[in-house]
Length: 474
Ligand SMILES: C[S@@+](CC[C@H](N)C(=O)[O-])C[C@H]1O[C@@H](n2cnc3c(N)ncnc32)[C@H](O)[C@@H]1O
Image 1 (cartoon, rainbow, N blue to C red):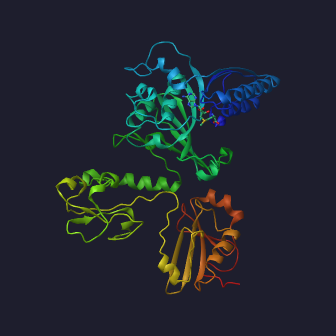
Image 2 (image 1 turned 90 degrees about the horizontal axis):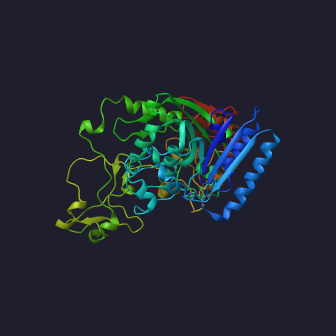
Image 3 (image 1 turned 90 degrees about the vertical axis):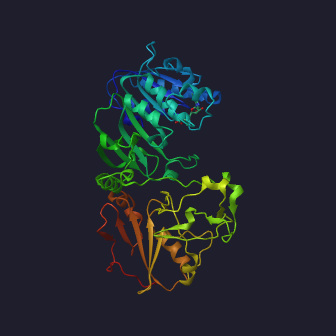
């Protein structure tokens, strides 16, 4: 993160908001240590947790000593106050952040702010109610406060959830923030489990760099890394900021093409001549929230006043199946005048089921057992299992973003699961792009195929004479 700042000036005032034990400030010091020309830094660190303050102070003293030895200077002050509320004087209610009163200006701000939803009545939420709707998350208030404290041209590097990039709750925040801060860089993590192992991170995170400047139509750089180490970043691409920051729907969304294939999909969607609304199509989530409709829920499908209740598990590609019994979920809704608000008029609907980026398993247990595959709760099936019945070939496809590639170990694991299955197998690992393929190249089992989404018409085959046909088991 410290490397994302542009080349540091001779004298720098740096803000570390929610400093913890000071690891981000230490990273900046580490970067300064590599510079041949002496720098003078002043760090201001905000931290409310008294338990970490001694360690924070100790770490900064060490940083100061190390910098001094290398000919640089460091001074610092630790503020044991609430960063957002303490800096609120700079945030007048009417003209938020336009308060003419003097406040300290920083050249750079770095942060890994706390993430939690705020009660609407909390002092934090009330201070920001003119830009944030619904249930604000404290991290956005940290970003906004830091933005207000930067000098023109100052830089903010933050690791935050990505929820601020879209959605209604953050719309006002985006509009306010992006008028003042130009987005320059987004770093994404391929696998959040690897990036934040053991850290109980629930939301998808990203690292961003914003410069305090009006929107200027420059480019935004994107990179991705598999784990937490940004040094291993791959897939560095740049897109025009006017293409990434999209206000055509009035929501000022920050669009995130996580891989080149996403960018291609975005281009295709952009090329459509009209929006859904122009075709008379509206998109909405269904009207039923089950816990609000408990009085009308039915557990049988044949009640005389019952109407079908459609859940995601009823929706299959080009097919809606009803009734389907699943985990005791209700099957129908009792139609009566009081439940009318939960019902949709009889018309034509297209049902969409949202697929999470994470593993989605459509487990056709009956079909698998007919093939001799017995799946226990602990078995990990590949992401996709296809059976070509004419040839009795089984395609076992792993998307590298979930478990990794079909490695020798994974190959053995799947073979054990398939020990009673007579079908011939073809193992395929699917990669998002060439960079991901290169990274895993040393870990791929022989006698497997590789497919790369960026180049979908080609396949790669690692050694052995055969291509896309089964191997006899030894
Ligand atoms: C996610 S941790 C990040 C710590 C450190 N910067 C790091 O990256 O390891 C957020 C820190 O913000 C502190 N914090 C939470 N609310 C705060 C507030 N309102 N003002 C200042 N610090 C706060 C927490 O005590 C915690 O140490």
